[in-house]
Image: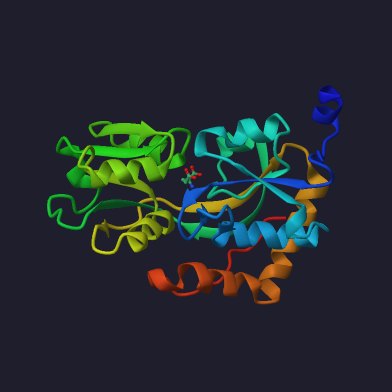
Length: 253
Ligand code: GLU
């Protein structure tokens, strides 16, 4: 049975539910609240797409998709698609396909609010301990471009942020929308510093060769942008963090 499911192309698990991989610990983007409900921009995008594919909220099963497990979850057929701050990159495209992009962002730094020593990537070379997440583009970029930095890789960004709070590390790096979510969650504790130093294009991850699903997800994204739901989701989730609503990025067909 398992073999059949793996090769069926479009897996429908769990009694007619669609299975979506998301983060559980990224405020603003995607969080699982204590009562078990999910919220955030990625979750709103995922729910909209599922709706367009014919799956109302009660027919969505959510699975946690940490950075280092996204390709694996897709390739094993454990999820139908992934909406998890997932940057479109050439090396990931060797293993999975992407619909979108649906959001543009870029890598930045989060430090403690009282830190005056770290002002941008250059300060990190001075024996600063930097945290990022295994299997993420920001961790890889630091390894490639800033070899002098002491990089510590954790499984989740929330673990990095706790380590920052406890002074076990000096800075966290990932996309600025993610960092802004943590800063907003703990007012006065943290701040973003420096300029964006990469361009990240968030895509919806799906199994390689799943062209029909890719086309339908792109149609859903386009509809979401056209009917104002994309803009409303942006305001709901990032408005408080001070980001103005941008133009949605053009979808790559
Ligand atoms: N967008 C980056 C990535 O896909 C960083 C965020 C994340 O780890 O989810 O790797």
